[in-house]
Image 1: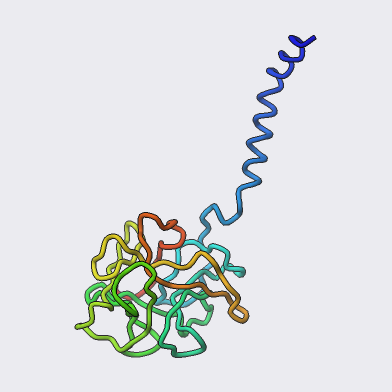
Image 2: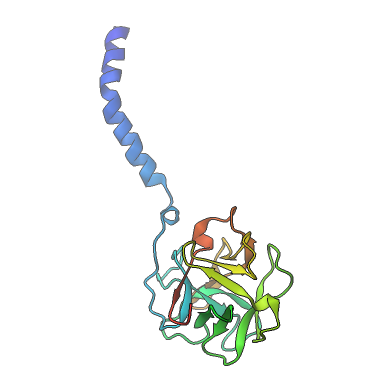
Length: 190
């Protein structure tokens, strides 16, 4: 009787394995698979390649904290009408430039180390904290030619009125999930 049961178990294994595989796919969180946003923000804009958990599929853009001009930057739902989420990369000047606030550039708030955040300051060609190189192959922004650090969004999102926001800072490229550090550039001079 045991031999018969074992033969039946062996014969049933392919069907069970298929069921286990399907169950395994169903258990994979939705965010685990990269999904691009349905970007509606007019160019120029710098946005995260993966929509992550942005509730309206607007994507994640570099943005000033608060309404309008702000001296601190974070990642925010890309706004369909643009405004303070519109940034361009000027590859020649090596700057991330605000398209909304004339003469303002993204800058590190401290030395280029993991965890340092970004601010929005007057553009200055003499400020190394404003140098950002864009690697189109890796979809990565790196500060001042540093190949080890990348511009990243935080892993946790939070409510921001009708939108969402995340932290924006530098992190080690090699140990950061690509979904949090891969950026696309639309418009501007990259």
